[in-house]
Amino acid sequence: PAPTPAWGASFVDQSAFLDAGQTKAWDLASAYPGQEGWLRFRIKNTGTRTWSSGGANPVRLGTADPRDRASGLVVVGSWLSTNRATAVSPASVPPGATGTFLLKVKVPAGTGTLRESFQAVAEGASWFGPVMWRDFGRPAWSASFVDQSAFLDAGLTQAWDLASAYPGQEGWLRFRVK
Image (cartoon, rainbow, N blue to C red):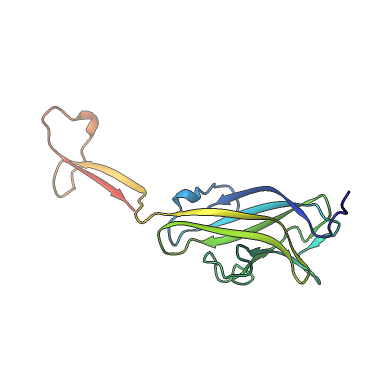
């Protein structure tokens, strides 16, 4: 059998969240320009080296396809650089254990679909593991419901109880969207 490489990884899972606490799922197909959220990638250490978030060869999540390019998802002050999102967590990931990369992202301006790709890199040693990617939908137009109200007058001052409305009665409906 072929020897086990020093740096190796296999895909475990990936998720997107609207909050840092990772409790509110984020539907990336409806992501809109300027929206911020968090991506989480988890990979298993299949190599012989223990991954570290520091030291001579810190393991980080770098931009891929092509490698080392500036990402359009960077949140200034949150990323390590424009082509390095974050370091592995926990600080030490031995062979057989799972490492996590949690990064804050901001959907850039523009419409259509944006694909962003990442891969693990042991700085100064090797890129390794699967290329992981996420697609972000960036609709030209989108809206979210705020509230709705019914009124008996055009000035929208007299609330209308629609449960007591009768045939032929006229009134005003207001729908607000963001």
